[in-house]
Image 1 (tube, helix red, strand yellow):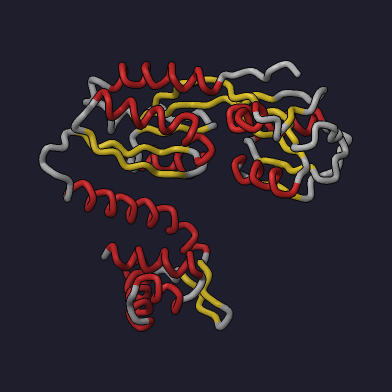
Image 2 (cartoon, helix red, strand yellow):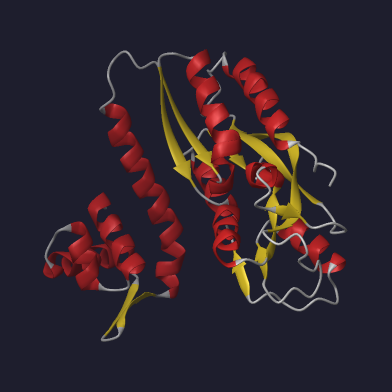
Length: 291
Protein backbone atom coordinates (compact mmCIF):
# COMPACT_ATOMS: atom_id res chain seq x y z
CA UNK A 1 0.00 0.00 0.00
CA UNK A 2 1.43 3.38 -1.03
CA UNK A 3 1.27 6.33 1.33
CA UNK A 4 0.36 8.53 -1.66
CA UNK A 5 -2.83 6.51 -2.12
CA UNK A 6 -3.85 7.15 1.50
CA UNK A 7 -3.04 10.85 1.18
CA UNK A 8 -5.09 11.03 -2.01
CA UNK A 9 -8.04 9.32 -0.30
CA UNK A 10 -7.85 11.89 2.52
CA UNK A 11 -7.70 14.78 0.05
CA UNK A 12 -10.82 13.51 -1.72
CA UNK A 13 -12.76 13.15 1.55
CA UNK A 14 -11.60 16.53 2.88
CA UNK A 15 -12.35 18.47 -0.32
CA UNK A 16 -15.45 16.48 -1.35
CA UNK A 17 -14.29 16.34 -4.95
CA UNK A 18 -11.82 14.41 -7.09
CA UNK A 19 -11.00 17.53 -9.10
CA UNK A 20 -10.37 19.66 -5.99
CA UNK A 21 -8.25 16.85 -4.53
CA UNK A 22 -6.21 16.87 -7.75
CA UNK A 23 -5.68 20.62 -7.42
CA UNK A 24 -4.61 20.29 -3.78
CA UNK A 25 -2.13 17.50 -4.58
CA UNK A 26 -0.97 19.15 -7.84
CA UNK A 27 -1.68 16.03 -9.91
CA UNK A 28 -4.14 15.20 -12.66
CA UNK A 29 -7.65 13.97 -11.90
CA UNK A 30 -6.86 10.70 -13.66
CA UNK A 31 -4.00 10.19 -11.17
CA UNK A 32 -6.39 10.75 -8.28
CA UNK A 33 -8.82 8.23 -9.77
CA UNK A 34 -6.06 5.66 -10.29
CA UNK A 35 -4.70 6.03 -6.75
CA UNK A 36 -8.15 5.78 -5.24
CA UNK A 37 -8.94 2.70 -7.30
CA UNK A 38 -5.65 1.07 -6.26
CA UNK A 39 -6.45 1.68 -2.60
CA UNK A 40 -9.96 0.27 -2.95
CA UNK A 41 -8.61 -2.78 -4.78
CA UNK A 42 -6.00 -3.46 -2.09
CA UNK A 43 -8.64 -3.30 0.67
CA UNK A 44 -11.42 -4.98 -1.28
CA UNK A 45 -13.84 -2.22 -0.29
CA UNK A 46 -15.46 0.75 -1.98
CA UNK A 47 -14.25 3.79 -0.04
CA UNK A 48 -15.78 6.75 -1.87
CA UNK A 49 -19.18 7.39 -3.42
CA UNK A 50 -18.56 9.27 -6.66
CA UNK A 51 -21.50 11.42 -7.72
CA UNK A 52 -22.03 14.51 -9.85
CA UNK A 53 -22.67 16.50 -6.67
CA UNK A 54 -19.33 15.45 -5.20
CA UNK A 55 -17.44 12.65 -3.45
CA UNK A 56 -18.38 11.29 -0.02
CA UNK A 57 -16.96 8.52 2.13
CA UNK A 58 -18.73 5.18 2.31
CA UNK A 59 -19.11 3.39 5.64
CA UNK A 60 -15.81 1.61 4.95
CA UNK A 61 -14.22 4.94 4.03
CA UNK A 62 -15.31 6.50 7.29
CA UNK A 63 -13.75 3.60 9.20
CA UNK A 64 -10.52 3.94 7.24
CA UNK A 65 -10.25 7.70 7.66
CA UNK A 66 -8.78 7.86 11.18
CA UNK A 67 -6.22 5.18 10.34
CA UNK A 68 -5.30 6.99 7.14
CA UNK A 69 -4.86 10.25 9.04
CA UNK A 70 -2.62 8.55 11.62
CA UNK A 71 -0.52 6.76 8.98
CA UNK A 72 -0.16 9.89 6.86
CA UNK A 73 0.77 11.92 9.93
CA UNK A 74 3.38 9.38 11.01
CA UNK A 75 4.89 9.40 7.53
CA UNK A 76 5.13 13.21 7.50
CA UNK A 77 6.65 13.10 10.98
CA UNK A 78 9.18 10.46 9.92
CA UNK A 79 10.26 12.50 6.88
CA UNK A 80 10.72 15.58 9.03
CA UNK A 81 12.73 13.77 11.70
CA UNK A 82 14.99 11.97 9.22
CA UNK A 83 15.93 15.35 7.70
CA UNK A 84 16.91 16.94 11.05
CA UNK A 85 20.57 17.88 11.67
CA UNK A 86 22.79 15.29 13.38
CA UNK A 87 23.27 17.46 16.49
CA UNK A 88 19.56 17.15 17.41
CA UNK A 89 19.37 14.71 20.31
CA UNK A 90 15.66 14.79 21.17
CA UNK A 91 12.58 15.17 18.98
CA UNK A 92 9.40 16.24 20.79
CA UNK A 93 5.95 16.51 19.26
CA UNK A 94 3.76 18.78 21.36
CA UNK A 95 -0.04 18.83 21.06
CA UNK A 96 -1.95 21.84 22.36
CA UNK A 97 -5.56 22.99 22.44
CA UNK A 98 -5.82 26.22 20.47
CA UNK A 99 -7.19 28.18 23.44
CA UNK A 100 -4.28 27.09 25.63
CA UNK A 101 -1.31 28.06 23.51
CA UNK A 102 -0.76 31.60 24.79
CA UNK A 103 -1.51 30.68 28.42
CA UNK A 104 0.24 27.34 28.69
CA UNK A 105 1.76 26.15 25.43
CA UNK A 106 4.33 28.93 25.20
CA UNK A 107 5.50 28.30 28.77
CA UNK A 108 5.87 24.56 28.14
CA UNK A 109 7.65 25.18 24.83
CA UNK A 110 10.18 27.53 26.44
CA UNK A 111 10.82 25.23 29.42
CA UNK A 112 11.40 22.19 27.21
CA UNK A 113 13.96 24.12 25.17
CA UNK A 114 15.67 25.42 28.31
CA UNK A 115 15.99 21.94 29.86
CA UNK A 116 17.11 20.24 26.64
CA UNK A 117 19.08 22.56 24.34
CA UNK A 118 19.47 19.90 21.62
CA UNK A 119 15.71 19.38 21.29
CA UNK A 120 13.62 19.78 18.14
CA UNK A 121 9.96 20.59 18.82
CA UNK A 122 7.00 20.27 16.48
CA UNK A 123 3.74 21.82 17.71
CA UNK A 124 0.36 20.33 16.76
CA UNK A 125 -2.80 22.39 17.32
CA UNK A 126 -5.96 20.38 17.93
CA UNK A 127 -9.05 19.80 20.02
CA UNK A 128 -9.48 17.17 22.75
CA UNK A 129 -10.46 14.38 20.38
CA UNK A 130 -7.58 15.09 18.03
CA UNK A 131 -4.91 15.27 20.73
CA UNK A 132 -6.22 12.06 22.31
CA UNK A 133 -5.89 10.29 18.99
CA UNK A 134 -2.40 11.67 18.42
CA UNK A 135 -1.27 10.52 21.87
CA UNK A 136 -2.72 7.04 21.31
CA UNK A 137 -1.02 6.67 17.93
CA UNK A 138 2.31 8.10 19.10
CA UNK A 139 2.09 11.18 16.89
CA UNK A 140 2.58 13.47 19.89
CA UNK A 141 4.63 12.94 23.04
CA UNK A 142 3.12 15.61 25.30
CA UNK A 143 -0.21 17.44 25.09
CA UNK A 144 -2.01 20.29 26.83
CA UNK A 145 -5.79 20.09 26.90
CA UNK A 146 -9.03 20.19 28.81
CA UNK A 147 -9.73 16.44 29.01
CA UNK A 148 -7.88 13.82 31.10
CA UNK A 149 -6.67 10.58 29.59
CA UNK A 150 -7.99 7.18 30.62
CA UNK A 151 -5.21 5.33 28.79
CA UNK A 152 -2.86 3.31 31.01
CA UNK A 153 0.00 4.18 28.65
CA UNK A 154 -0.36 7.89 29.43
CA UNK A 155 0.25 10.05 32.49
CA UNK A 156 -2.30 12.75 33.31
CA UNK A 157 -1.27 15.77 35.38
CA UNK A 158 -3.98 18.21 36.48
CA UNK A 159 -2.35 21.63 36.34
CA UNK A 160 -5.02 24.06 37.47
CA UNK A 161 -8.67 25.00 37.18
CA UNK A 162 -9.22 27.84 34.73
CA UNK A 163 -11.90 30.36 35.75
CA UNK A 164 -14.65 31.08 33.20
CA UNK A 165 -16.36 34.43 33.81
CA UNK A 166 -19.35 36.10 32.18
CA UNK A 167 -18.09 39.25 30.48
CA UNK A 168 -19.46 41.99 28.25
CA UNK A 169 -18.35 45.36 26.85
CA UNK A 170 -21.51 46.69 28.51
CA UNK A 171 -21.29 46.69 32.32
CA UNK A 172 -25.10 46.83 32.58
CA UNK A 173 -25.75 43.83 30.36
CA UNK A 174 -28.33 41.39 31.85
CA UNK A 175 -26.94 38.17 33.30
CA UNK A 176 -29.90 36.11 32.10
CA UNK A 177 -32.14 36.49 29.05
CA UNK A 178 -29.52 38.45 27.13
CA UNK A 179 -30.67 38.30 23.49
CA UNK A 180 -27.05 38.78 22.37
CA UNK A 181 -25.60 36.06 24.61
CA UNK A 182 -22.89 33.98 22.95
CA UNK A 183 -22.36 30.39 24.04
CA UNK A 184 -18.73 29.23 24.09
CA UNK A 185 -18.09 25.49 24.06
CA UNK A 186 -15.98 24.55 27.06
CA UNK A 187 -16.49 20.82 27.50
CA UNK A 188 -19.20 18.48 28.77
CA UNK A 189 -18.81 19.40 32.44
CA UNK A 190 -19.21 23.12 31.70
CA UNK A 191 -22.24 22.39 29.52
CA UNK A 192 -23.93 20.52 32.37
CA UNK A 193 -23.18 23.20 34.96
CA UNK A 194 -24.20 25.96 32.56
CA UNK A 195 -27.53 24.25 31.82
CA UNK A 196 -28.24 23.89 35.54
CA UNK A 197 -27.38 27.53 36.28
CA UNK A 198 -29.39 28.92 33.36
CA UNK A 199 -32.20 26.37 33.22
CA UNK A 200 -34.83 28.98 32.32
CA UNK A 201 -32.76 30.93 29.80
CA UNK A 202 -33.25 30.76 26.05
CA UNK A 203 -30.81 28.91 23.80
CA UNK A 204 -28.08 31.16 22.41
CA UNK A 205 -28.35 32.08 18.74
CA UNK A 206 -24.57 32.30 18.36
CA UNK A 207 -21.96 29.84 19.57
CA UNK A 208 -18.22 29.36 19.19
CA UNK A 209 -15.95 26.45 20.03
CA UNK A 210 -12.99 28.76 20.56
CA UNK A 211 -12.89 31.40 23.28
CA UNK A 212 -10.62 33.79 21.37
CA UNK A 213 -13.11 33.96 18.48
CA UNK A 214 -15.98 34.60 20.90
CA UNK A 215 -13.99 37.38 22.56
CA UNK A 216 -13.34 38.99 19.19
CA UNK A 217 -17.07 38.81 18.45
CA UNK A 218 -17.91 40.55 21.73
CA UNK A 219 -15.51 43.37 21.00
CA UNK A 220 -16.99 43.92 17.52
CA UNK A 221 -20.69 43.25 18.11
CA UNK A 222 -21.34 43.39 21.85
CA UNK A 223 -23.26 40.82 23.85
CA UNK A 224 -21.99 38.60 26.65
CA UNK A 225 -20.16 35.29 26.93
CA UNK A 226 -18.25 33.06 29.31
CA UNK A 227 -14.55 33.64 28.60
CA UNK A 228 -11.44 32.33 30.42
CA UNK A 229 -10.40 34.98 32.93
CA UNK A 230 -6.79 35.03 31.77
CA UNK A 231 -7.94 35.89 28.21
CA UNK A 232 -10.26 38.63 29.40
CA UNK A 233 -7.85 40.07 32.00
CA UNK A 234 -6.13 42.72 29.80
CA UNK A 235 -9.48 44.05 28.59
CA UNK A 236 -10.88 44.01 32.11
CA UNK A 237 -7.90 46.03 33.32
CA UNK A 238 -8.47 48.54 30.50
CA UNK A 239 -12.18 48.65 31.38
CA UNK A 240 -13.18 47.85 27.83
CA UNK A 241 -14.69 44.64 29.16
CA UNK A 242 -16.57 43.97 32.41
CA UNK A 243 -17.41 40.95 34.55
CA UNK A 244 -21.17 40.96 34.99
CA UNK A 245 -22.01 41.04 38.72
CA UNK A 246 -24.07 38.18 40.11
CA UNK A 247 -23.14 35.74 37.36
CA UNK A 248 -21.84 32.34 38.48
CA UNK A 249 -18.16 31.59 37.86
CA UNK A 250 -17.37 28.21 36.35
CA UNK A 251 -14.06 26.34 36.45
CA UNK A 252 -12.50 24.14 33.76
CA UNK A 253 -9.54 21.90 34.61
CA UNK A 254 -6.43 22.00 32.43
CA UNK A 255 -4.37 18.84 31.98
CA UNK A 256 -0.87 17.96 30.88
CA UNK A 257 -0.79 14.55 29.16
CA UNK A 258 2.36 12.51 28.59
CA UNK A 259 2.84 9.52 26.28
CA UNK A 260 4.85 7.22 28.55
CA UNK A 261 6.15 5.01 25.74
CA UNK A 262 7.60 7.70 23.50
CA UNK A 263 9.14 9.65 26.41
CA UNK A 264 10.48 6.69 28.41
CA UNK A 265 14.13 7.62 27.87
CA UNK A 266 13.77 11.32 28.65
CA UNK A 267 15.37 11.43 32.09
CA UNK A 268 15.20 15.24 32.11
CA UNK A 269 11.46 15.41 31.42
CA UNK A 270 10.12 15.15 35.00
CA UNK A 271 12.06 18.21 36.14
CA UNK A 272 11.04 20.14 33.04
CA UNK A 273 7.37 19.33 33.54
CA UNK A 274 7.53 20.30 37.21
CA UNK A 275 8.99 23.66 36.21
CA UNK A 276 6.51 24.21 33.40
CA UNK A 277 3.59 23.04 35.51
CA UNK A 278 4.30 25.61 38.23
CA UNK A 279 4.45 28.45 35.70
CA UNK A 280 1.31 27.34 33.89
CA UNK A 281 -0.65 26.81 37.10
CA UNK A 282 0.15 30.32 38.32
CA UNK A 283 -1.17 31.80 35.09
CA UNK A 284 -4.33 29.71 34.90
CA UNK A 285 -5.49 29.68 38.51
CA UNK A 286 -6.26 33.40 38.74
CA UNK A 287 -9.48 34.44 40.50
CA UNK A 288 -11.84 37.24 39.44
CA UNK A 289 -11.12 40.63 40.94
CA UNK A 290 -13.77 42.25 43.11
CA UNK A 291 -15.83 44.86 41.29
